[in-house]
Image (cartoon, rainbow, N blue to C red; front, side, top):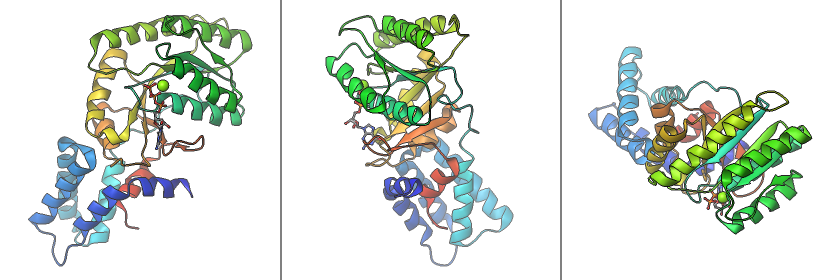
Amino acid sequence: MGLFDSLKRGLERSREAINEVFYFGGEVDEGFWEDLEDTLVMADMGAEISQQVTDDLRDEAARRNLTTAPALRRALAERLERVFAAPAADPFRDTPSCVLFVGINGAGKTTTVGKIASAEAARGGRVVIGSADTFRAAAIEQLDVWGQRAGVPVVKRERGSDPASVCFDVLDEAERSGRDLVLIDTAGRLHTSPELMRELAKVVNVTRKRAASMKTGPMAVRVILVIDAATGQNGLNQALEFNEALGLDGIILTKLDGTAKGGIAFAVAARLKLPIVRVGVGEQVDDLQAFDAHDFARALVGGE
Ligand SMILES: Nc1nc2c(ncn2[C@@H]2O[C@H](COP(=O)(O)OP(=O)(O)OP(=O)(O)O)[C@@H](O)[C@H]2O)c(=O)[nH]1
Ligand SMILES: [Mg+2]
């Protein structure tokens, strides 16, 4: 199955709802615009962006005299595509780069680190993984499995160690062995826990300091928030809190293959102006894609 097809399958539920809005007979009336706005809200886009997109599309329809379903659908896809920021430097290709994966419990951080390690190592990247989730014993084993599969070393310490010291160790190892892509897994935590967020801020600060003084030259540090797309609008709260505490550089949306509605991508992109650097579309090693705003908008809206 092609990448676009798996995305389309994942967003099927939202697309079907949008399809229904476009089955109007005759004229575009007030009901059409109300239904459209409601459907975008239902797709997890959030009230603010749903209203804005609907209002903009309504203006455009009047201005360009768009009256048919295909024309309106195309204009909707184009408008939604514009919600996303132009892609910045790819944190996994613009090396030397140290990327910290953060997010709430079970979002898909460890799996995503594994997938990215595999993908980048396969294309010749010099990758090393740091296991800074020292909270759960199983997390270290889980990451070891991914590391072995990718042929990428995993730097770790025993359970209960200071996660910041693992970050220090993995940057030492990168310096020693000339690896220029460092992927650091962190323990899941609730964005509503000030204590755990402070701990994470410390981990990020230590990493920044160490990365700035690499013998091989300063290494960029990026903090990427992993969000389970199925968490819906709560994903926006997560993004706001993590961004406030750490200063995020990008987002990875996972589980877009499942019950996700997809709209959270627009909500986060519109509010935080952060790039979506990858999307997860399954549990297997290859189930990771670069994010393409054009494809994403069309997978959601459907039509030609
Ligand atoms: N369907 C699907 N499942 C995924 C995806 N990404 C991760 N998962 C699954 O989600 C579950 C949790 O993934 P983890 O990678 O362990 O999540 P985590 O964020 O590291 O979790 P904690 O370390 O406990 O905070 C696992 O069963 C993964 O296989 C995805 O894109 N699609
Ligand atoms: Mg994990």
